[in-house]
Amino acid sequence: MASIQMRGVHKRFGSTHVIKGVDLDIEDGEFVVFVGPSGCGKSTMLRLIAGLEDITEGDLFIGDKKVTTVAPSKRGVAIVFQSYALYPHMNVYDNMAFGLKLAKHDKGEIEQRVREAARILQIDQLLERLPKELSGGQRQRVAIGRAITRQPQVFLFDEPLSNLDAALRVQTRIEIAKLHERLSTTMIYVTHDQVEAMTLADKIVILNAGHIAQVGAPLELYHHPDNLFVAGFIGSPKMNFIECSIVEASAKGATVELGDGSRIEVPVDADRAKKGDKATLGIRPEHVTPTSDDGATSFRGKVEIVEHLGEGSFIYLNTDVSSERFIIKEDGDSKATSDQDLGVWMPPESCHLFDPDGQAYHRLERHTSDG
Image (cartoon, rainbow, N blue to C red; front, side, top):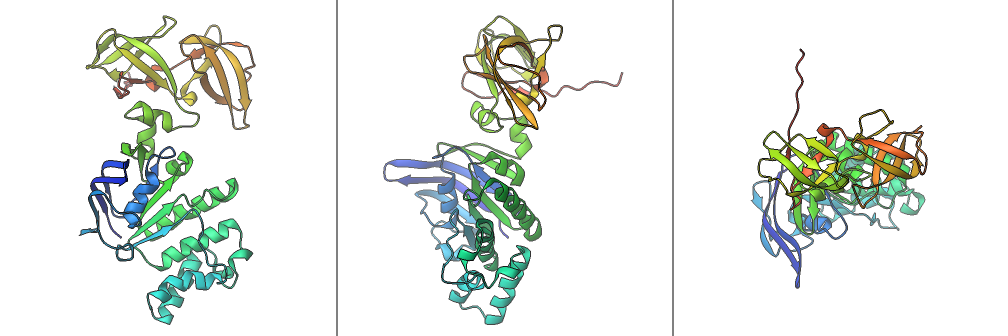
C-alpha cells in the first residue's frame, strides 16, 4: 500500500495544455475517484500516475519515493482498462498468470496468487475457459484478477465498467467496493458516471479543464459545493440555478430578490457581498416541494411535462424566475399534470448561493433549541 502526492503537475501535448498545475494528496488505502466531463483530464491524470504518459512539469511521489521519471513497471501500480485486453488464445488462468511468468516468479507462487485472486473475485470455476466463453462482467473480473495477482501498492481503474450493461455495472461496482474493503489497498478510479463516484469513493476529485474544481468526501461535495461547476456536476438531475440580486447581506445571511420580485432569505455567510450584487441561487430538485394554493410558496410556474420513473417523478416547470426549466423531484405517484399552474416552495436551509464569479457563499448550519 502507498500514499500518492502530486506537486505542481502539468501535462502538455505539444501546445495543448491538458493538466494545469495539479496538487493532490491521496492517503494510503484510500479509494479515490477522478470524475468530470469529457476532456477534463481525468484519464490523463491516471496515466501520469501509471507512468504511461510523461509529466511535463512537477513531481509525483508514490509512498516516500519520487517516481516522476521511473518506468511504469517499477512504480508498484497495476491498471485495469476500459477494454479488457485479454489474450484470446489463453485461458483465464494463463491470462492472470502471464505477467507473473514474465517477471519469472516461482511456479508455486504463481499458482497461489492466481487461485487466491480467482477466489476473491469468485471466478475460480472459470479458470479453464477462454475469454470468448465469458460474459462481459466475467472478462472484466479476469482483468481485475490479473491486476490483483501482481500485488501492487496502487490499483488504477480507467472507466472499467463502461462496456457493461446497466445490471452488470451495478454488480461489478459492488464487487470492486468489496475488493477494496478486503485488500485495503490504495485505489484510484476514473469515471464519467457520478453514481459510481458517489457510491465507491472515500474521496472524489472533480476535474474541470485540467484543474481540480474540488476535492472531498461524496456527501461533502453534494451538500457543500465550492462553486457553480461542482454544484451543477454533482447530482442527477442537476441543481436548479436562478439568477438573482442581493438585497441585504451579512455574515449571518443574505436576502435575495428573484426575477419576479419575490424574496428569499438564504442562511449563508455573505459578509463579502454588497447590496445590488448579482448572484446565483441554487437548489437541488429533490429539496423542492410543489405546493397547493394555500401552502408556503417561493414562486409559481407552469408544468411543461412530468416524467414518471416509478420510484420518483420529475416535474419540469416553465417559470418567470429562470430561462431554464426548473426541475422538481417528487414521489413516484406525483399527481402533477402538464399545463398545471404549480406553486414552488424552496426551503431556505436547502438553498445555495454563489457570487458573480461562481464561488459559493459558505452555508450556515441552523440549529433549533429544545425549548
